[in-house]
Length: 274
Ligand code: SIN
Image (cartoon, rainbow, N blue to C red; front, side, top):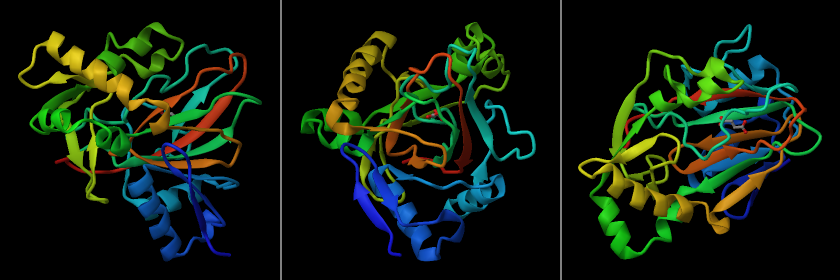
């Protein structure tokens, strides 16, 4: 079997004909290159055991633990992204880039669908290479000198937004890092420039007032989710997405009230961004 890579419109690529537990080194390199260049790789029919998911993630890169997400009972490397039949709020229901509040943000995640609702529960991914490339030369020049501040406290801290929801276990944390990163980064794997601000964790530009930052960020946020930069991925049990936080945003749709959705997420370490 030869692996087949088919680019999905807007963002990402589907990879077929790979059985992840038996992947060769060449296939792992193909997956990693696809993630670096298309922002996210989608695979189906990967009914992995926790050990197999951990072993696969370690071949993509070193695993790092998310501070806030609940862990699976036996495997601290695997976080549970869960919404039960009774809960109204889902996890990751707004556009975001994971871990941008860290000095060395995570490279990405390996998300495996364990239980999916009969309909709904898709995840949208937005392509930050394409969003950047479509900006005017004038705005690219302005952004090239800017750094933005990112933080987690307003989401996961003592007064964090999850605290007022039925996912309250995600808030109330005392450790709330913040970081400053360039507004446009050069992806360490592809060498391409990508927009690196996001609606969930970016507070504003260094040296700009809150109002000035809000005006430009507001423009960038509506620009970055134009349909031509976005792919909506439909999950089945055994579907897997491997995404790159340096090249994408994502948003988990919350359109399956009364149904259960359970995903197993492993986060891959990254590094400082330039
Ligand atoms: C996340 O933001 O990590 C969750 C994505 C999803 O559940 O689809």
